[in-house]
Length: 475
Image (cartoon, rainbow, N blue to C red; front, side, top):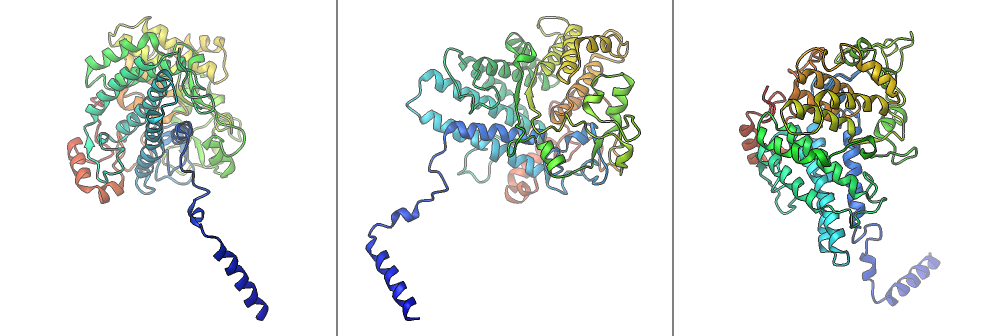
């Protein structure tokens, strides 16, 4: 005991000799500043993870568009999006992980006097393009959302802006961003820009295709604005697969594709093919079928019923290529752009080429992207059920059906296209909780914490229901 007392007295004496102890307050594991490029990269990856995931807590759109079904847990497949608070997670991811980090990155770059005006303009434009991407995702998920007040941390109760007003402002922002981008100045480095690896030329193409996309989404609600956006974008938009913007996941953790993390690392074996997609691919002898799905134990391709307790040995599973650890996440690509051009021609907009040519280009590029050949695509397009001149239905049905197939593994985009083109018509899930969902309901915590603004927003859109149509969903 005497030795212990002597030891502690000695320690206290040593402590007393240290006059300045302020360095003990330094949080060595919390940086005082974060490089703006790191914030940009984190925001981009957060967006990619959300859009790519198949977690029933995050992204349920593969079930909504009838690409996948489940064997056991059926809540989300049956349009129950609230049990696991999916709207809240989606809302939080877009605002906190994506938009706030992009905003913080922009603030740091704006205040940096060491970079040239050209570099600063490029970086700020790129950050804004990504903000437009995220805000458009929110608007096209919920309708009216916080916008002008959204990224002000001092405002705890942001108001909800009108969805159409936001959409039109996003187009204006893209107009400005495109005018600011200059290939004569640098932007983010390749390691910071994990989407386009520092290429300003690819960002210009991305922004033009994004403007085309956003214009066509509102075409049935505001044809004049849509026409102006599409026609301004056509020449500068993505024109080949080499222009695609995608985030390349890695073979090793922690940057593996979320599908790999869920299915392989997490051991989830309950994701299976949906019969709507499998039956369509089989009927059309689609060469993408073996790239999308694996054969059953019996050696055939079989889809399961969405919303039903499917027996895993009797139905097809996603093909390993789909959930490979290093499978990329497409943000914007040539396939999507060519479908937009085909639609634009049908709407009477002034864009180059014919609807049939763009339709054929889109399908051919999709087949090649998934591992097929140009010969495979030619054979596929020669079928009367696929050929643009003879396929069933209006241009909306022809383009909508083929786009639904091509947007496999991009289910949020597929959901948007199904809502606005109204094709294809998919089979309702077994024991569906509602009709086909046209939006997410607002997060429960918004109702509790921002109640006044939530109530006003719900009333403005016609009710906070999954079946309330967004302003652009006219038919």
